[in-house]
Length: 227
Image (cartoon, rainbow, N blue to C red; front, top):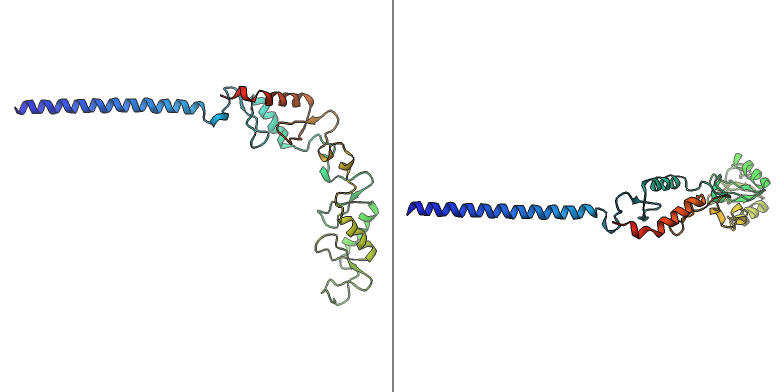
């Protein structure tokens, strides 16, 4: 009797162990299968087919292109103002015959050279025409016949009233006399021989026509390159 009980227990242990091994094996196969599926779509529904990568012309650009095209786009993105008519001084470039006013370093209002010369002369002697010992407006109070220039908030250089009137008039139209006004497409206008890339709506990086053609072709083929 004792022998039979021991035999039955051994059979049960063997059966349970085998079952556990089978479950573990099935589970392992299932995990492997899941991993295989996951690896095919590591980047979600926009995962590219083998041999393609995301273009990344901007943060949301998931069009699949060849690696050399993506590298080309990266280089273009690193110099977004290249090949523009106003690339040297940017969109604040003044029209011919005008220069930046520079009441302060960031003052890019375009004025005639004589106005800028006067402004720089005033900047060089900021305490000129101040009332001796101060006055109603503190130490920056101007002497009689002079007023604060007010080219920017806090500009207390003392100038004549007519010069202050000129400055305030310029302040009301800060983008006047800029070169972009004479360009067909404003500050984003490309130099001759270049066109906007148009990888996405609003992409105004200037590239050669063949690059733009390739970009539009990649846009059109986007759906066919997804894994």
